[in-house]
Figure 1: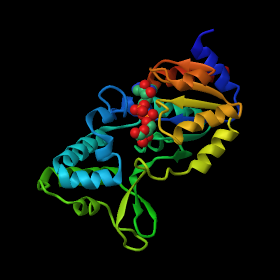
Figure 2: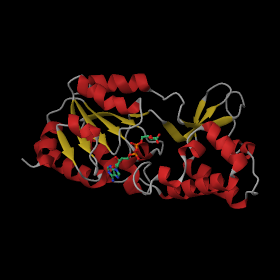
Figure 3: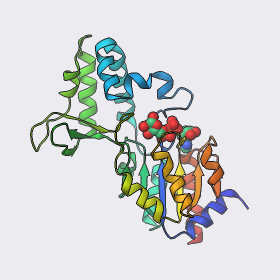
Figure 4: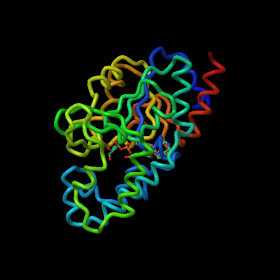
Length: 268
Ligand code: APR
């Protein structure tokens, strides 16, 4: 049987579906992944921009590298829109088949596609967190990106970390300084209890666009599998999850999801 047809039948006959997504689902939105050839970790050293300490040290030692990284990031995220992969998950939610999305992505594209239950284990780039009281506030994406671009377009070569901090609004609760509410390497991941609860209660997990190499997030599909959920993986490159998948679709998610949704609708 055609693997898409097999996947569609599993989806149509599942009661509680949860999706687990990684950078690959946003690749067709123009956001580079981390570990594909030419990805972020090919362009920049994770030790220099993947940790809070690394960014602070790099601002002091190589401010031009931070400027290039943030300017490139601002341009990429300004143009990024949800793609058919994101919209396919929204369609499954509208068909009352998909209960939640657990994402490692910080790009807000699942929410912009209209998905309503998004668990962000690595945070969200367009949310700020108070360094004093911990209060979180959603930011206006385009305003923040414009502020980043304007600052770095005019930034002196020797800008300081405080210049970066001042690009974010102060806390509405205590007026404290804030930081992006994203999880850097070595920091506490977010919403893991909610993510594992979803993994343990689903009977099917769709795994889209992740290399599955960063823990603890990468353990989430394994938790679902251990609780007897079926796994369907969508990824042009096979990886560990292939070995626990009932169906593996070796395709970009932006191409696979629309095909799957049409087949599922014919079965409902
Ligand atoms: N559709 C589906 N999958 C794709 C596509 C696509 N169009 N393009 C690439 N992929 C796959 C790649 O084959 C790869 O397996 O997406 C995966 C991306 O892997 P990574 O770059 O490692 O991204 P991810 O798995 O999300 O990384 C996890 O690592 O650096 C940290 O915090 C960061 O959240 C990130 C975490």
